[in-house]
Amino acid sequence: MSRAIVLDKIQDKNIRLIYAAIFLLGVAYGVPIALSSLLLSQRGYTKADIGTLAAFFAGGIVALSLPMGSIIKRFSARRTLIVSLIGYAMTVGSFPFVRSYPQFAAVRVIDGMCSVGIWVACETILLSRADKRHKAFVVSLYAIAMGLGYVVGPIMAHLIAHFVPMEYAFVAAGIVALLSAAMVLAKLDGDVADTHHAHVVEPSASETPADGAAYRDVHYVPVPAKSALELLAKIRTSCFATLAYGYFQASVVLFLPLYLIEAKGIAATRTILIPAFFAAGMLALSNFTARFGDRYGHLLLMRLLGAAGTVMVLGFVWIDSFFAMSAAVFVAGSTLASISPVSLALQGAVVAPPDYSRANAIYNAFYASGMLLGPIISGAIFTRSGGAPMLLHLAVLWAAFVVFATMFRRDDPVYRAQKSRAVAPSAA
Image (cartoon, rainbow, N blue to C red; front, top):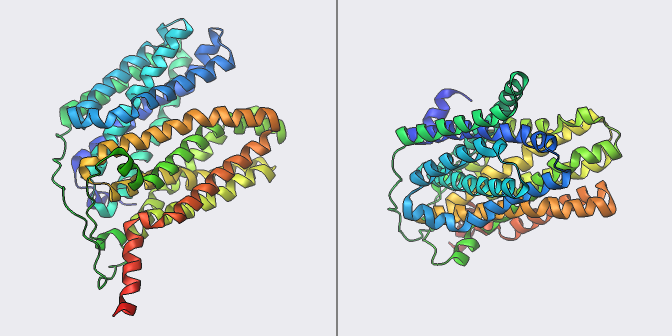
């Protein structure tokens, strides 16, 4: 993908600024991901303690997800993003200096609350500024920027911890997050005005798609939702997708390495590479899949990715070779992880701009709920029945999403436009 293509589709400098800010945040996230469990283990905390602290993080996200939409409408996405970045910087920088379990739990809750503020604010800014023809493209680059930060962060943490005590790495992560906040404060423009309070204009049956660019010819202007339930009805497929992804991601990170060690006899040192293959799949193909979604319809793509990902998760049970497993994890990352930016883009297509902040808040609440429930339920199944049933129930979850997205395929404006064009000749 050339630089000219990116600049042609992303002409707003504020979008590129969000990419830079979220990359720095990804670096700051990568440090605690790499070192938190080591630090806590050194201080005598058990694996159960470390796991429950992760639940406190998800709890912080859930607690502030729904109010975040109102907070952004009241104070603006820009201000919310700056305050949340500063809050996260202070949180990650102070993490190694607390001692008791309640203190660590409080820090993790605040971490989650600041994180959801950052995510909802960034997503609101991106959706409000992205052209409707390229929303998935824009959001996929956002996911890639954060993913690259996740790669750089652990490397930075490893280098710092090699020369000085690991506590300094957390301080460095806080400084990186502060740099992100300073950049947003200095360069980001104010929020886009809510000027789209228009009615729905269904596509004309006589129109035909130009060069396959689906959203280019769908004249659909969403009406602002009157209630949270009405808004949820509009974004139900996106919410199911992000719930399934949060559930799956949190479960696989914790339990797939254990399953490979216990059931497949793969060395523990090799399982460390498994998350890297998953991330590599997402980084390699999410932008390509996003362009497909922008061209032919987001929900259609989500169903295809969900079906392919379901097959890959089923493959985890029967694959024994480490290299074959690595390939399957790569494909799972390129399909299931790629659903996330596409689902957010679909949300941007069906929600009125004044409702972006509320919709993104609901969307992230479902994501956090999946992160909270996944490890608990998957861990219980793993303990009672073994790793294979645990993986099979994850495949059932994705299959249920595919069925749900098929049932509500009319939620995508592109599908409605295609049906209108198909009906028009017979009506004439």
